[in-house]
Image (tube, rainbow, N blue to C red):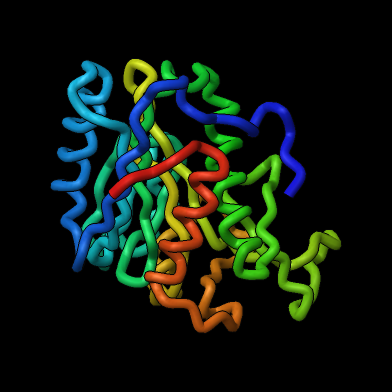
Length: 236
């Protein structure tokens, strides 16, 4: 993929240790995850811990970002709902969705929020490309999208497309937390309890929904390889 200057080369400064890569087994409690991320981000900021990418799955739940509109929570009693300090609107997390929490020190890289978000998008798009899926950005919508040419276009002529990955981050003193979520094989019906990211005109898809017999382990391998291309080396 041809990258713009703003999103390429988000490597840490020379001599920085590799980013730690941690994969959680089972389902991770959301509130415990937030506590862990905040503590780890503080330790990274203070120089007491290495940067970390933490891959988890959550039990079914909805999260509300800083731009969430109450009217976009369609079934408030369906799953637990958590308010969170990340950017964005309502999202769903659940089994079969790979959530990657990204705790990086941008002072070791580049103190540029736009470049960082663009690099996260590039990470997702490259990961999808390695599995022969074309993911795309949209200027007016957050996340990564897949065009669905087999479906009719919208009344305004816009092609039908579905969201396959969400991005929502928070920075505290230039250390990031929260991150990305890629739909591997979640129950897509669970997204019907919200207006995902405030978008009503398009749907939601997953790797398996697109016809790929992909396991979570397959997705993790692709994520790690693409991450290293953009952000630098990782270590268990």
